[in-house]
Image 1 (cartoon, rainbow, N blue to C red):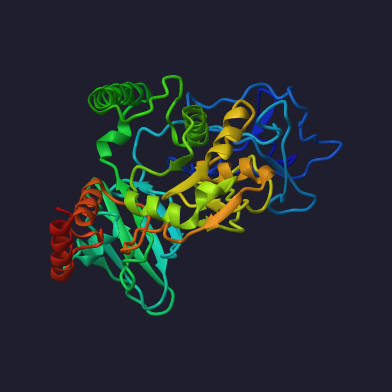
Image 2 (cartoon, helix red, strand yellow):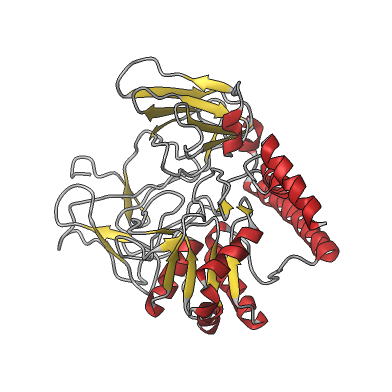
Length: 426
């Protein structure tokens, strides 16, 4: 903007036309402006900004603002208690796209790091930069069992040496799972959901109605399972979304404390649990005689993410307190009671595992480190838990454990020993 090109004045704001920018679903962006001062205020008085327009849910606004004293991206975060947005000087005009524009995304991939699932259309392209000497293998499912297949779905091979780029495009509709070609078993799986093109043209009203029917069917199935097996804790007033997981776990501990259970175990629904080994290990460690016990595999000095699936806009420290990874961890009853007593005061941070670490930091729990609570999708005979498995693989792991005591598979000798042991028991 300048006196020669002042833009168009509309409702107290000046707009300058630019080439359209296509923002795919889930992308996070920031409006950065400069040149403010006494003659050009930044308009950051709380409550005097007017109202934000989210386009009926097309755009979400994070409760974090930034400022800086020099050019470039502002590096100082700030927020106010009165509202979720602080500066009204920068704004933009947007509209919902009715046409699925092809987009090109870039990602520097590291096999040991977790990545959020990505949504793509068949016409989109993902340029994946990988390490020299490695390649990309497409699997039939996201768990480690798929690495054993002799013929994968497809091998995506880079062309040039050095830092190499694999271009992924033209995926058929449905989920696609990728891993490191050289170290598939220990690789975090990259999940890409290829969306049918026709779905992208659904109106918001149609999508909302479609999702309402899906939720209705899910609730029916949950009620049917509860009626048949009585194995679910249903929270009727709780909206079950990813961002509400901390609140869900809090309510679970409220129930656990009221049930007078000595310990409460939290896990994810894609995890294998070796329950007999968990009970035996609990006795071996003598956890019943200890207080303020938190038993799991702990991640320490984990940096707080500001972007992506695990973006944390409210916890301002640079790293989290030590927290147990999500495959499984156990709290003693006194810690469940602490959560229950304070449940109406605890803030829902972005993830249930890191949130629990923040809640418990003030009581200094006894962290019992045990790497048998595995953080990655791999299988060892002595594991207590293993995450990121499909329902079919969970059944296979449990059946193998029941046959020979080893969830990772039964050799002929181990099967014979187990049969002999069974005859002795009889």
